[in-house]
Image (tube, rainbow, N blue to C red; front, side, top):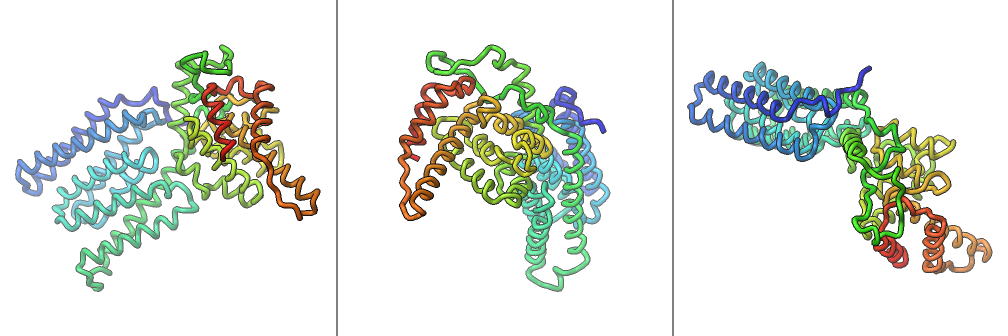
Length: 438
């Protein structure tokens, strides 16, 4: 099965805006004339719709969303399909299946982009169906709630709970609209509305799974590619580490890494969520390795923040650095396979390969931080275990962290473990200071 088209084949954003803008204006004018709405009101709605669309397109460009595989085609199809559904259901406003358009964009591409599109559809629907202000507010709340919970609709483990939350909230809104009268709230119209929301959620999840299968990231399967976040120091005298010419970034490397970052299946919040399916598998396999990974993630994240590195990347690398243990084989290569299978970002593949100096040297500050964190924690735990063992568990353990930190940093520096990490002298000293006082 062919993958979706890459960023280079996407429709220019100006053309995309022109096509969708003309369609929106046409639909608004059509409904306005059909419902006998004043021309001034129609023009106001046209301007408001164009403004919302303009904001959405600006956001698409600013966030580089347009570089996602097949974005222009999918976005256009979703937009046009939703407009058609609105036209066919204008007499039945309770059939809110058109909401799946905004929800699908939120799930596939970006939650905030989903907001802009959802609000535009609500604007057009309110004109098409001649809705009163109460029902418009109801749609705005429902649409906002759906987009806010869109990230939880990407996993089958949380999809059911999310649907229950949305339907429960929707029932409350229907009850309020009907002046808290139970007889008016529980009717066939309310049932249609609830079923429409359920269909929107189910359809969006189904389409998301199809998209993920076809839009497999390019660089996730190439863990040995240069890391986008590995930067040279602007002042070579400020760095105690050197980097070979073969490892320097080129414009093509950067473009490829940006593409990989934008086409990954999950955002950073999902990757760091302890309920993420891959982490749940690790927890089920070994609670000891799972807790170790959480500890390394927490400390590495704080260390990265202390030296100005990427905190979230360090935390994610810590969480997944031993994920290959699940397979009970060679954990580094198995870890790489699992990360590729779940379409996680390329930097996690890099960290899995680079946190163990016996395998590959760290090529980013985050990988170096995780390697040092593991060394310090492992040494400390080993010494504590030895003291307890020698004393029969009776002696209190108080291992001086200063000696451990000094030895680990000196060993890594002497062996050249940090030569390609991109850490500066300032960051090196800040990192050491962090571990001395953690």
